[in-house]
Length: 503
Image 1 (cartoon, helix red, strand yellow):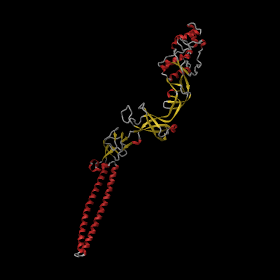
Image 2 (tube, one colour; image 1 turned 120 degrees about the vertical axis):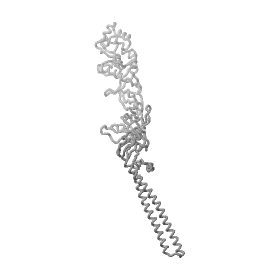
Image 3 (cartoon, rainbow, N blue to C red; image 1 turned 135 degrees about the horizontal axis):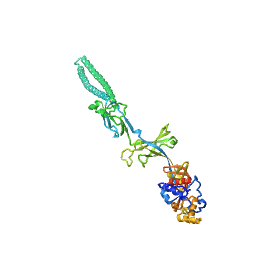
Image 4 (cartoon, helix red, strand yellow; image 1 turned 30 degrees about the vertical axis):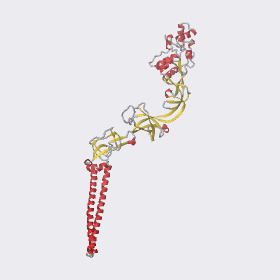
Protein backbone atom coordinates (compact mmCIF):
# COMPACT_ATOMS: atom_id res chain seq x y z
CA UNK A 1 0.00 0.00 0.00
CA UNK A 2 1.01 3.63 -0.57
CA UNK A 3 1.37 6.00 2.33
CA UNK A 4 -1.06 8.87 2.25
CA UNK A 5 1.66 11.45 2.80
CA UNK A 6 3.63 10.40 -0.31
CA UNK A 7 2.98 12.25 -3.58
CA UNK A 8 2.12 10.01 -6.52
CA UNK A 9 4.72 10.28 -9.30
CA UNK A 10 3.85 9.76 -12.96
CA UNK A 11 6.61 8.36 -15.16
CA UNK A 12 6.98 10.47 -18.32
CA UNK A 13 8.63 8.83 -21.35
CA UNK A 14 12.22 9.86 -21.74
CA UNK A 15 15.30 9.35 -19.64
CA UNK A 16 15.19 12.83 -18.09
CA UNK A 17 11.69 12.33 -16.69
CA UNK A 18 12.55 8.86 -15.32
CA UNK A 19 15.60 10.31 -13.65
CA UNK A 20 13.50 12.92 -11.88
CA UNK A 21 11.39 10.16 -10.36
CA UNK A 22 14.43 8.09 -9.42
CA UNK A 23 16.23 11.07 -7.93
CA UNK A 24 13.23 11.87 -5.81
CA UNK A 25 13.49 8.39 -4.25
CA UNK A 26 17.27 8.08 -4.28
CA UNK A 27 17.79 10.58 -1.47
CA UNK A 28 15.38 8.93 1.02
CA UNK A 29 16.75 6.98 4.00
CA UNK A 30 15.75 3.32 3.74
CA UNK A 31 15.10 2.90 7.49
CA UNK A 32 18.40 3.40 9.27
CA UNK A 33 17.59 5.55 12.31
CA UNK A 34 14.04 5.80 11.05
CA UNK A 35 12.38 6.41 14.40
CA UNK A 36 10.38 9.62 14.68
CA UNK A 37 10.40 10.25 10.91
CA UNK A 38 13.91 11.83 10.84
CA UNK A 39 16.32 11.41 7.89
CA UNK A 40 19.88 10.98 8.86
CA UNK A 41 22.67 12.08 6.49
CA UNK A 42 20.65 14.85 4.85
CA UNK A 43 22.39 17.92 6.17
CA UNK A 44 21.56 19.99 3.11
CA UNK A 45 17.93 18.93 2.94
CA UNK A 46 15.50 21.51 4.22
CA UNK A 47 11.87 22.39 3.97
CA UNK A 48 10.20 22.94 0.62
CA UNK A 49 11.84 25.83 -1.20
CA UNK A 50 15.25 25.27 0.37
CA UNK A 51 18.30 25.28 -1.94
CA UNK A 52 19.53 21.89 -3.15
CA UNK A 53 23.02 22.31 -4.65
CA UNK A 54 24.01 18.64 -4.84
CA UNK A 55 22.60 15.85 -6.97
CA UNK A 56 23.51 12.15 -6.88
CA UNK A 57 23.01 9.72 -9.79
CA UNK A 58 23.76 6.08 -10.25
CA UNK A 59 25.86 5.02 -13.18
CA UNK A 60 22.77 3.82 -15.03
CA UNK A 61 21.00 7.11 -14.42
CA UNK A 62 23.99 9.11 -15.63
CA UNK A 63 24.20 6.97 -18.74
CA UNK A 64 20.49 7.41 -19.48
CA UNK A 65 20.84 11.17 -19.10
CA UNK A 66 23.77 11.24 -21.52
CA UNK A 67 26.02 13.02 -19.04
CA UNK A 68 29.43 13.99 -20.30
CA UNK A 69 32.17 15.65 -18.30
CA UNK A 70 35.19 17.73 -19.33
CA UNK A 71 38.05 19.08 -17.28
CA UNK A 72 38.22 22.85 -16.91
CA UNK A 73 41.60 24.35 -17.65
CA UNK A 74 43.57 27.03 -19.48
CA UNK A 75 42.51 27.96 -22.98
CA UNK A 76 43.00 30.63 -25.62
CA UNK A 77 39.83 32.68 -25.76
CA UNK A 78 39.02 34.37 -29.03
CA UNK A 79 36.46 37.09 -28.41
CA UNK A 80 33.99 37.43 -31.24
CA UNK A 81 31.30 39.91 -32.11
CA UNK A 82 28.42 38.15 -33.84
CA UNK A 83 26.40 40.18 -36.31
CA UNK A 84 23.54 39.46 -38.67
CA UNK A 85 24.47 39.87 -42.32
CA UNK A 86 23.11 39.77 -45.86
CA UNK A 87 24.94 39.10 -49.13
CA UNK A 88 24.90 42.12 -51.45
CA UNK A 89 26.03 42.79 -54.99
CA UNK A 90 29.41 44.38 -55.42
CA UNK A 91 28.20 47.80 -56.49
CA UNK A 92 31.64 48.64 -57.86
CA UNK A 93 31.31 45.94 -60.51
CA UNK A 94 27.78 46.38 -61.85
CA UNK A 95 26.50 48.33 -64.82
CA UNK A 96 23.07 49.57 -65.86
CA UNK A 97 22.82 49.48 -69.65
CA UNK A 98 20.78 52.21 -71.35
CA UNK A 99 20.58 53.13 -75.05
CA UNK A 100 22.25 56.35 -76.19
CA UNK A 101 19.61 56.95 -78.81
CA UNK A 102 15.84 56.46 -78.75
CA UNK A 103 14.58 53.73 -80.99
CA UNK A 104 12.47 50.65 -81.60
CA UNK A 105 13.63 47.26 -80.28
CA UNK A 106 14.04 44.97 -83.26
CA UNK A 107 15.79 41.94 -81.70
CA UNK A 108 17.09 40.77 -78.33
CA UNK A 109 20.33 38.81 -78.37
CA UNK A 110 20.85 38.10 -74.62
CA UNK A 111 18.46 36.80 -71.99
CA UNK A 112 18.22 36.96 -68.20
CA UNK A 113 20.98 34.93 -66.57
CA UNK A 114 23.27 34.90 -69.61
CA UNK A 115 26.97 35.56 -69.11
CA UNK A 116 28.31 38.21 -71.47
CA UNK A 117 31.72 39.57 -72.34
CA UNK A 118 32.63 43.21 -72.72
CA UNK A 119 31.45 44.75 -76.04
CA UNK A 120 29.15 41.81 -76.78
CA UNK A 121 25.87 42.74 -78.51
CA UNK A 122 22.83 42.70 -76.18
CA UNK A 123 20.07 43.89 -78.50
CA UNK A 124 19.38 45.77 -81.75
CA UNK A 125 17.40 49.00 -82.06
CA UNK A 126 16.12 50.88 -85.08
CA UNK A 127 16.82 54.55 -84.50
CA UNK A 128 15.90 57.48 -86.72
CA UNK A 129 18.33 59.69 -84.85
CA UNK A 130 21.15 57.27 -85.47
CA UNK A 131 20.21 57.08 -89.15
CA UNK A 132 20.38 60.84 -89.45
CA UNK A 133 23.72 60.97 -87.66
CA UNK A 134 25.12 58.19 -89.83
CA UNK A 135 23.92 59.98 -92.97
CA UNK A 136 25.55 63.23 -91.85
CA UNK A 137 28.79 61.39 -91.21
CA UNK A 138 28.83 59.68 -94.58
CA UNK A 139 27.95 62.96 -96.30
CA UNK A 140 30.78 64.79 -94.53
CA UNK A 141 33.21 62.05 -95.38
CA UNK A 142 32.18 62.03 -99.04
CA UNK A 143 32.42 65.82 -99.20
CA UNK A 144 35.92 65.76 -97.78
CA UNK A 145 37.01 63.11 -100.21
CA UNK A 146 35.61 65.17 -103.12
CA UNK A 147 37.39 68.32 -101.95
CA UNK A 148 40.66 66.46 -101.73
CA UNK A 149 40.23 65.16 -105.29
CA UNK A 150 39.42 68.64 -106.55
CA UNK A 151 42.49 70.03 -104.85
CA UNK A 152 44.61 67.33 -106.36
CA UNK A 153 43.24 67.85 -109.86
CA UNK A 154 43.33 71.65 -109.81
CA UNK A 155 46.83 71.59 -108.42
CA UNK A 156 47.93 69.57 -111.45
CA UNK A 157 46.23 71.97 -113.88
CA UNK A 158 47.55 75.07 -112.22
CA UNK A 159 51.00 73.57 -112.07
CA UNK A 160 50.86 73.00 -115.82
CA UNK A 161 49.87 76.66 -116.42
CA UNK A 162 52.84 77.76 -114.36
CA UNK A 163 55.10 75.45 -116.35
CA UNK A 164 53.83 76.95 -119.69
CA UNK A 165 54.36 80.49 -118.45
CA UNK A 166 57.79 79.49 -117.26
CA UNK A 167 58.66 78.09 -120.68
CA UNK A 168 57.53 81.28 -122.48
CA UNK A 169 59.46 83.40 -120.07
CA UNK A 170 62.62 81.35 -120.54
CA UNK A 171 62.36 81.71 -124.35
CA UNK A 172 61.79 85.47 -124.26
CA UNK A 173 64.68 85.87 -121.87
CA UNK A 174 66.97 83.96 -124.25
CA UNK A 175 65.91 86.15 -127.23
CA UNK A 176 66.44 89.25 -125.13
CA UNK A 177 69.89 88.15 -124.14
CA UNK A 178 70.81 87.57 -127.84
CA UNK A 179 69.26 90.92 -128.70
CA UNK A 180 67.05 89.24 -131.22
CA UNK A 181 63.80 90.41 -129.62
CA UNK A 182 62.71 93.60 -128.01
CA UNK A 183 62.17 93.99 -124.28
CA UNK A 184 58.39 94.15 -124.40
CA UNK A 185 57.75 90.44 -125.07
CA UNK A 186 60.18 89.61 -122.33
CA UNK A 187 58.34 91.75 -119.74
CA UNK A 188 54.96 90.38 -120.83
CA UNK A 189 56.23 86.79 -120.41
CA UNK A 190 57.58 87.62 -116.98
CA UNK A 191 54.22 89.07 -115.98
CA UNK A 192 52.34 86.01 -117.19
CA UNK A 193 54.65 83.73 -115.20
CA UNK A 194 54.05 85.66 -112.00
CA UNK A 195 50.29 85.66 -112.58
CA UNK A 196 50.28 81.87 -113.14
CA UNK A 197 52.14 81.29 -109.91
CA UNK A 198 49.81 83.62 -107.99
CA UNK A 199 46.73 81.91 -109.39
CA UNK A 200 48.14 78.49 -108.47
CA UNK A 201 49.03 79.44 -104.93
CA UNK A 202 45.77 81.28 -104.16
CA UNK A 203 43.64 78.45 -105.53
CA UNK A 204 45.55 75.82 -103.60
CA UNK A 205 45.19 77.91 -100.47
CA UNK A 206 41.42 78.29 -100.99
CA UNK A 207 40.94 74.59 -101.63
CA UNK A 208 43.03 73.78 -98.55
CA UNK A 209 40.80 75.96 -96.38
CA UNK A 210 37.70 74.28 -97.75
CA UNK A 211 39.20 70.87 -97.04
CA UNK A 212 39.91 71.91 -93.44
CA UNK A 213 36.27 72.92 -92.96
CA UNK A 214 35.08 69.61 -94.36
CA UNK A 215 37.48 67.75 -92.09
CA UNK A 216 35.97 69.57 -89.12
CA UNK A 217 32.46 68.63 -90.21
CA UNK A 218 33.53 65.02 -90.64
CA UNK A 219 35.18 64.95 -87.21
CA UNK A 220 32.01 66.37 -85.64
CA UNK A 221 29.84 63.77 -87.33
CA UNK A 222 32.25 61.03 -86.31
CA UNK A 223 32.27 62.11 -82.66
CA UNK A 224 28.50 62.15 -82.62
CA UNK A 225 28.41 58.57 -83.81
CA UNK A 226 30.97 57.58 -81.20
CA UNK A 227 28.82 59.21 -78.54
CA UNK A 228 25.88 57.20 -79.84
CA UNK A 229 27.86 54.02 -79.30
CA UNK A 230 29.44 53.16 -82.63
CA UNK A 231 32.93 51.73 -82.46
CA UNK A 232 35.91 52.49 -84.69
CA UNK A 233 35.22 49.30 -86.64
CA UNK A 234 31.62 50.38 -87.15
CA UNK A 235 32.79 53.72 -88.53
CA UNK A 236 35.27 52.17 -90.91
CA UNK A 237 32.64 49.92 -92.46
CA UNK A 238 29.78 52.34 -92.27
CA UNK A 239 29.57 52.97 -96.01
CA UNK A 240 29.36 49.24 -96.64
CA UNK A 241 26.78 48.64 -93.88
CA UNK A 242 23.38 49.56 -95.21
CA UNK A 243 21.77 48.65 -91.91
CA UNK A 244 23.67 51.34 -90.04
CA UNK A 245 22.75 53.74 -92.78
CA UNK A 246 19.11 52.97 -91.99
CA UNK A 247 19.64 53.53 -88.26
CA UNK A 248 20.38 50.06 -86.89
CA UNK A 249 21.76 50.59 -83.39
CA UNK A 250 23.66 47.76 -81.65
CA UNK A 251 23.53 48.02 -77.85
CA UNK A 252 26.70 46.44 -76.44
CA UNK A 253 27.74 45.25 -72.98
CA UNK A 254 29.99 47.80 -71.26
CA UNK A 255 31.66 45.09 -69.16
CA UNK A 256 31.75 41.34 -68.59
CA UNK A 257 29.30 39.80 -66.16
CA UNK A 258 25.92 38.15 -65.71
CA UNK A 259 22.63 39.69 -66.80
CA UNK A 260 20.64 39.83 -63.58
CA UNK A 261 17.86 42.11 -64.82
CA UNK A 262 16.26 42.77 -68.23
CA UNK A 263 13.45 45.17 -69.00
CA UNK A 264 12.55 45.25 -72.69
CA UNK A 265 10.46 43.42 -75.29
CA UNK A 266 10.60 43.30 -79.05
CA UNK A 267 8.95 46.18 -80.95
CA UNK A 268 9.00 48.30 -77.82
CA UNK A 269 10.06 51.93 -78.13
CA UNK A 270 12.79 52.91 -75.67
CA UNK A 271 14.57 56.17 -74.99
CA UNK A 272 17.81 57.25 -73.40
CA UNK A 273 16.37 57.00 -69.86
CA UNK A 274 15.33 53.34 -70.20
CA UNK A 275 17.38 50.85 -68.16
CA UNK A 276 17.26 47.82 -70.44
CA UNK A 277 19.82 45.52 -68.77
CA UNK A 278 21.63 45.21 -65.45
CA UNK A 279 24.99 43.43 -65.66
CA UNK A 280 26.82 42.33 -62.54
CA UNK A 281 30.27 40.86 -62.11
CA UNK A 282 29.54 38.18 -59.49
CA UNK A 283 33.12 36.97 -59.08
CA UNK A 284 33.26 39.02 -55.87
CA UNK A 285 30.40 39.98 -53.56
CA UNK A 286 29.83 42.10 -50.48
CA UNK A 287 28.60 40.70 -47.18
CA UNK A 288 27.00 43.58 -45.30
CA UNK A 289 26.63 43.13 -41.54
CA UNK A 290 24.86 45.41 -39.06
CA UNK A 291 26.64 46.47 -35.87
CA UNK A 292 24.81 48.41 -33.18
CA UNK A 293 26.31 51.70 -32.13
CA UNK A 294 27.21 50.30 -28.69
CA UNK A 295 29.61 47.83 -30.33
CA UNK A 296 30.83 50.12 -33.10
CA UNK A 297 34.08 51.02 -31.33
CA UNK A 298 35.07 47.33 -31.38
CA UNK A 299 35.05 47.21 -35.19
CA UNK A 300 37.87 48.37 -37.45
CA UNK A 301 39.05 47.92 -41.02
CA UNK A 302 41.21 44.89 -41.69
CA UNK A 303 39.55 42.92 -38.88
CA UNK A 304 39.28 39.19 -39.53
CA UNK A 305 35.74 37.98 -40.16
CA UNK A 306 34.08 34.57 -40.41
CA UNK A 307 30.92 34.40 -42.52
CA UNK A 308 28.30 31.66 -42.19
CA UNK A 309 25.23 31.54 -44.40
CA UNK A 310 22.00 29.69 -43.71
CA UNK A 311 22.03 28.30 -47.25
CA UNK A 312 25.33 26.45 -46.62
CA UNK A 313 25.34 24.94 -43.12
CA UNK A 314 28.77 23.93 -41.87
CA UNK A 315 30.59 26.20 -44.33
CA UNK A 316 32.71 29.04 -42.93
CA UNK A 317 33.98 31.75 -45.28
CA UNK A 318 36.86 33.91 -44.13
CA UNK A 319 37.41 37.52 -45.07
CA UNK A 320 38.25 40.95 -43.69
CA UNK A 321 36.37 44.14 -42.95
CA UNK A 322 36.90 46.44 -45.93
CA UNK A 323 34.56 49.33 -45.11
CA UNK A 324 32.59 50.75 -42.19
CA UNK A 325 29.73 53.00 -43.19
CA UNK A 326 29.96 56.62 -42.09
CA UNK A 327 26.27 56.75 -41.30
CA UNK A 328 24.25 55.11 -38.51
CA UNK A 329 20.68 54.21 -39.40
CA UNK A 330 18.39 56.50 -37.38
CA UNK A 331 15.76 53.80 -36.92
CA UNK A 332 17.74 50.65 -36.12
CA UNK A 333 20.70 52.52 -34.59
CA UNK A 334 23.00 50.18 -36.49
CA UNK A 335 25.91 50.81 -38.82
CA UNK A 336 26.75 48.76 -41.91
CA UNK A 337 30.04 46.86 -42.01
CA UNK A 338 31.23 45.44 -45.32
CA UNK A 339 33.21 42.23 -45.88
CA UNK A 340 34.27 41.46 -49.45
CA UNK A 341 34.48 37.79 -50.46
CA UNK A 342 35.39 35.90 -53.64
CA UNK A 343 32.40 34.07 -55.06
CA UNK A 344 34.17 30.72 -55.39
CA UNK A 345 32.38 27.36 -55.77
CA UNK A 346 31.09 25.70 -52.60
CA UNK A 347 31.28 21.90 -52.26
CA UNK A 348 27.90 20.27 -52.61
CA UNK A 349 26.45 22.74 -55.12
CA UNK A 350 27.48 22.68 -58.77
CA UNK A 351 25.97 26.04 -59.69
CA UNK A 352 28.41 28.90 -60.35
CA UNK A 353 28.52 31.95 -58.11
CA UNK A 354 26.91 30.35 -55.04
CA UNK A 355 26.99 33.56 -52.98
CA UNK A 356 23.74 34.99 -54.28
CA UNK A 357 22.68 38.51 -53.28
CA UNK A 358 19.99 38.35 -50.61
CA UNK A 359 21.30 35.29 -48.76
CA UNK A 360 21.04 35.68 -44.98
CA UNK A 361 23.65 34.68 -42.44
CA UNK A 362 25.91 35.77 -39.61
CA UNK A 363 29.35 37.33 -39.35
CA UNK A 364 31.76 36.73 -36.46
CA UNK A 365 34.30 39.52 -36.12
CA UNK A 366 37.50 38.60 -34.25
CA UNK A 367 37.76 41.51 -31.82
CA UNK A 368 40.36 40.19 -29.31
CA UNK A 369 42.37 37.15 -28.25
CA UNK A 370 43.83 36.35 -24.82
CA UNK A 371 44.75 33.41 -22.61
CA UNK A 372 42.30 32.36 -19.86
CA UNK A 373 43.47 30.46 -16.78
CA UNK A 374 40.16 28.59 -16.51
CA UNK A 375 37.73 28.01 -19.36
CA UNK A 376 34.84 25.65 -20.03
CA UNK A 377 32.67 24.90 -23.09
CA UNK A 378 29.76 27.27 -23.62
CA UNK A 379 27.23 24.43 -23.26
CA UNK A 380 28.39 23.80 -19.68
CA UNK A 381 26.98 27.16 -18.57
CA UNK A 382 23.47 27.14 -17.07
CA UNK A 383 21.51 30.40 -16.85
CA UNK A 384 18.57 30.57 -14.50
CA UNK A 385 17.22 34.04 -13.87
CA UNK A 386 20.11 36.16 -12.65
CA UNK A 387 22.00 33.05 -11.54
CA UNK A 388 24.79 31.59 -13.67
CA UNK A 389 26.28 28.27 -12.64
CA UNK A 390 27.82 24.98 -13.73
CA UNK A 391 27.59 21.42 -12.40
CA UNK A 392 30.87 20.05 -11.10
CA UNK A 393 31.32 16.27 -10.88
CA UNK A 394 32.61 15.04 -7.51
CA UNK A 395 34.44 11.74 -6.90
CA UNK A 396 32.03 8.79 -6.37
CA UNK A 397 31.84 7.37 -2.78
CA UNK A 398 30.33 3.95 -2.23
CA UNK A 399 30.51 4.27 1.54
CA UNK A 400 28.72 7.58 1.43
CA UNK A 401 26.00 6.03 -0.66
CA UNK A 402 25.49 3.26 1.83
CA UNK A 403 25.31 5.74 4.67
CA UNK A 404 22.50 7.43 2.81
CA UNK A 405 20.51 4.21 2.85
CA UNK A 406 20.70 3.43 -0.93
CA UNK A 407 21.56 -0.28 -0.52
CA UNK A 408 19.88 -3.30 -1.98
CA UNK A 409 16.88 -5.02 -0.38
CA UNK A 410 18.84 -7.19 2.08
CA UNK A 411 20.84 -4.28 3.39
CA UNK A 412 17.70 -2.30 3.86
CA UNK A 413 16.09 -5.16 5.73
CA UNK A 414 19.17 -5.64 7.91
CA UNK A 415 19.17 -1.93 8.74
CA UNK A 416 15.55 -2.19 9.75
CA UNK A 417 16.35 -5.07 12.14
CA UNK A 418 19.21 -3.09 13.69
CA UNK A 419 16.80 -0.25 14.29
CA UNK A 420 14.49 -2.50 16.27
CA UNK A 421 11.99 -3.29 13.54
CA UNK A 422 11.49 -7.05 14.05
CA UNK A 423 8.66 -7.71 11.66
CA UNK A 424 7.34 -6.34 8.46
CA UNK A 425 4.42 -4.52 10.06
CA UNK A 426 6.80 -2.57 12.29
CA UNK A 427 8.78 -1.65 9.25
CA UNK A 428 5.65 -0.41 7.49
CA UNK A 429 4.73 1.68 10.50
CA UNK A 430 8.17 3.21 10.60
CA UNK A 431 7.96 3.84 6.86
CA UNK A 432 4.74 5.74 7.38
CA UNK A 433 6.36 7.94 9.98
CA UNK A 434 9.35 8.72 7.79
CA UNK A 435 7.32 9.50 4.68
CA UNK A 436 8.34 6.41 2.64
CA UNK A 437 6.29 3.92 0.65
CA UNK A 438 5.94 0.25 1.47
CA UNK A 439 8.62 -2.34 1.01
CA UNK A 440 7.82 -2.95 -2.65
CA UNK A 441 8.59 0.65 -3.55
CA UNK A 442 12.27 0.10 -2.77
CA UNK A 443 12.67 -1.75 -6.04
CA UNK A 444 13.34 1.70 -7.55
CA UNK A 445 16.46 2.23 -5.43
CA UNK A 446 19.67 1.36 -7.27
CA UNK A 447 22.24 -0.05 -4.90
CA UNK A 448 25.17 0.84 -7.22
CA UNK A 449 27.74 3.58 -6.44
CA UNK A 450 26.49 7.13 -6.85
CA UNK A 451 28.02 9.91 -8.94
CA UNK A 452 27.67 13.23 -7.17
CA UNK A 453 27.38 16.60 -8.84
CA UNK A 454 27.41 19.97 -7.11
CA UNK A 455 25.87 23.14 -8.51
CA UNK A 456 28.43 25.92 -8.37
CA UNK A 457 27.82 29.57 -9.16
CA UNK A 458 30.42 31.11 -11.50
CA UNK A 459 31.40 34.51 -12.85
CA UNK A 460 31.84 34.62 -16.60
CA UNK A 461 34.57 36.57 -18.35
CA UNK A 462 35.42 36.65 -22.05
CA UNK A 463 33.45 34.50 -24.47
CA UNK A 464 34.93 32.66 -27.42
CA UNK A 465 33.36 30.70 -30.23
CA UNK A 466 32.78 27.61 -28.07
CA UNK A 467 34.55 28.32 -24.78
CA UNK A 468 33.89 30.73 -21.94
CA UNK A 469 36.36 32.16 -19.47
CA UNK A 470 35.50 31.53 -15.80
CA UNK A 471 36.81 34.32 -13.60
CA UNK A 472 35.42 32.99 -10.31
CA UNK A 473 33.87 29.75 -9.06
CA UNK A 474 36.10 27.13 -10.72
CA UNK A 475 39.73 26.14 -10.72
CA UNK A 476 41.79 24.30 -13.28
CA UNK A 477 41.22 20.56 -13.00
CA UNK A 478 37.56 20.72 -11.95
CA UNK A 479 35.40 18.22 -13.82
CA UNK A 480 32.46 20.10 -15.36
CA UNK A 481 29.32 18.61 -16.90
CA UNK A 482 29.01 19.70 -20.55
CA UNK A 483 26.10 17.48 -21.64
CA UNK A 484 23.04 16.46 -19.65
CA UNK A 485 22.88 19.66 -17.61
CA UNK A 486 19.11 19.85 -18.16
CA UNK A 487 18.61 16.63 -16.20
CA UNK A 488 20.79 17.84 -13.34
CA UNK A 489 19.08 21.22 -13.34
CA UNK A 490 15.67 19.52 -13.16
CA UNK A 491 16.81 17.26 -10.34
CA UNK A 492 18.20 20.21 -8.38
CA UNK A 493 14.98 22.09 -8.96
CA UNK A 494 13.04 19.10 -7.67
CA UNK A 495 14.95 19.41 -4.40
CA UNK A 496 14.31 23.13 -4.18
CA UNK A 497 10.57 22.59 -4.52
CA UNK A 498 10.53 19.89 -1.88
CA UNK A 499 9.50 17.19 -4.31
CA UNK A 500 12.50 14.94 -3.61
CA UNK A 501 15.87 14.65 -1.94
CA UNK A 502 18.75 15.83 -4.05
CA UNK A 503 22.32 15.29 -3.06
